[in-house]
Image (cartoon, rainbow, N blue to C red; front, side, top):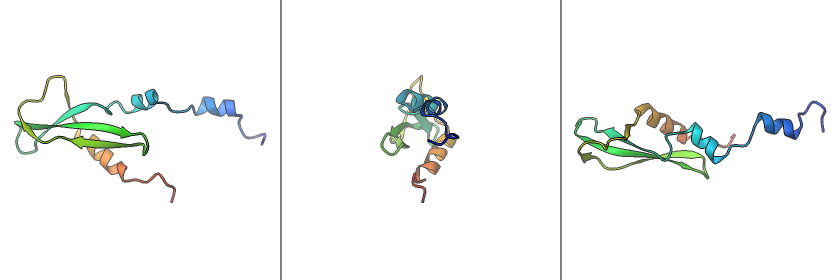
Length: 97
């Protein structure tokens, strides 16, 4: 072992392993339903659901069809920039090449 290299215990304290709870705290919008209004008609909305794929470590966005009505109380409106950011980064590859 190189004397300049930190020990395994020191590395584990500096960079702890990620677990499910830790990832859930980083992405609070995953496994939660939101609503989104129709761009032209404000009396229509659809639900948007975010799910994380554990094998690829990417977030998938699922949309329902638009329905006429009022969104349920307690459901938050989705930020369009969140959807744009997820769709923009999902195509990035994990490989270094």
